[in-house]
Image (cartoon, rainbow, N blue to C red; front, side):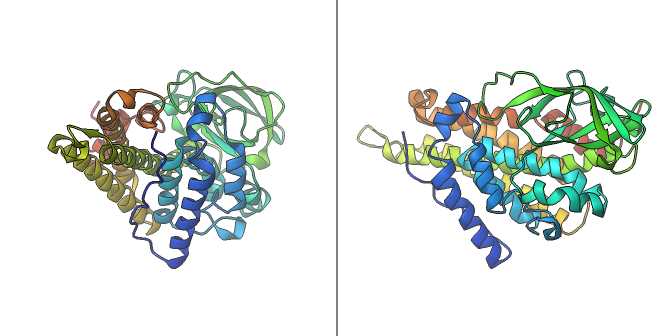
Length: 390
C-alpha cells in the first residue's frame, strides 16, 4: 500500500489568512484523518472525535457570519477546505458539507434572536447537524413530501418518516422540511429539531457499498413537538429555503468529488512511478501516461467549474445553473477518475489493501446525493430552455 503523503494542490487563494487556513486543514488531514481512514471505514466507525476537533478549530462554520460563531470565509475558500478533507476521507468532507447544509436555513432565514440562540453552538460549539428533506417515497420529487407538521397552540407536532439522512441517529440537530399546508411546494415549512426530541427515533443505518463510516438512516417522527420559536422562516417558505440550501450544498458535493478524484490520481501516480514491468516503471508506457493526463485534466476542469460557481455566489450573483453544472461534471469526473485508478493498479486496485477500490465505491454515491445527476441535467436544461411544456 502507498503511504506517501500526496503533494499539496497548487491553489489560488484570495488572502494570506486563507492560505494559512488551508495549511491547517492539510495538517489535520494528514495527521488525524488520512492514516486511520481505511481501517475505520471498513469497521463502519464514525470519527466523531475528528468533527469535535474540526469544530474546535473553527472549521465547521467557515462560510457563516462571524457574529454568530462562523468563520466569515467566502465559498471559494470553504469549498477548497471541503476538497482537502474529502481527499483524506470522504466521510469527513461530506460530513462537513452536510453539517453546513443543516445550518444554512437558520443562518439565511432565521430571525436575529434565533441566530443568537442557536447558531454559536451549531457553528462552533461541537454540535453536529443533519438535513431532513428526502422521504421513502419522495426523493427527486421533493415537493411531494408527506411528513406533516400540525399547529397545536405555540407548538408544532411533526409526524412522518425521513429517509437517506446522513448523520441520522447521531446528529445533535436536524433541519426538517414538513408539510404544514396543501399539496406542492407552497405547503412546506422548515423547522429546527433537537436531536434528543421526544418521539424522534432512528432506524438501523443503511448497509451501503461505500462510506460505511458515515451513518445513513431513516428518521421517524412520532408526534415530535417543536416550539414555534424553532420554525425557520415563514409558514410555507420551507421549499424556497430547501432549494437555496441545495444550490449551496451541490457545490459542496462537487468539491468533495474533486477531493476523491484527486486522491485517486495521487494514488495512481505513486503506483505507476513505483511499479516496474519489463524493467521500467509502468508510468513510462504511453497508454498509461495518457490515462493519467486525462484524469488530471478532468480534475482541473472540475475544480475550475466549482470555483467559478463559488465566486458567483460570493459576489451575490445567481449561481443555481452553475451549481448544477458543477455537481454534475465533478461527480461524473470522480466516477471516471476512480474507475481509471482501479484499472491502473490492476489486480491490486481490486483489493482492499489499496485505497483505489474504496475511492471508486465512494465516488458512486456522489452522483446520487443532493439531486441525482439526471436531476442536475433537468435543472440545467430549465435554465437554458425554460420549463418543459405540458
